[in-house]
Amino acid sequence: MIIYNVTVKVEKEISENWVNWMQNEHIPDLLNTGLFNDYTLSMLLEQDESDGITYIVQYHCENMEKYNHYIEDYAPIMREKAFIKFGNKFIAFRTLMKRMN
Picture (cartoon, rainbow, N blue to C red):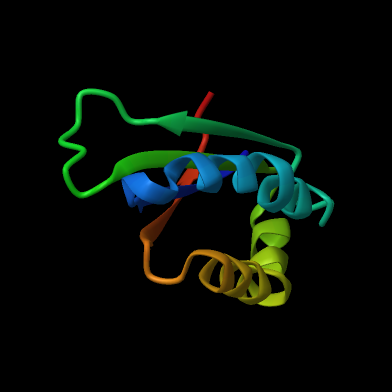
């Protein structure tokens, strides 16, 4: 199992709209690619929120081939949609993990 982990710091003023957009547009669009089979959306607790609220989205896929297909064919479009919607009011960084159990 491959876990595509996206950590996003979102300015407070857009956080509610961002979460709504993630749950109702972005995540369904990503799952509709057929390359990921599950996800988890979380909010970090006990963090300094003066610069924004930190969220973590973990998308689960079966193998590296599916992940690479997403990165090559879908990721640029998905990222562009986020920037069109929210501009520079968020920052994201991505990591890749392999589930060991």
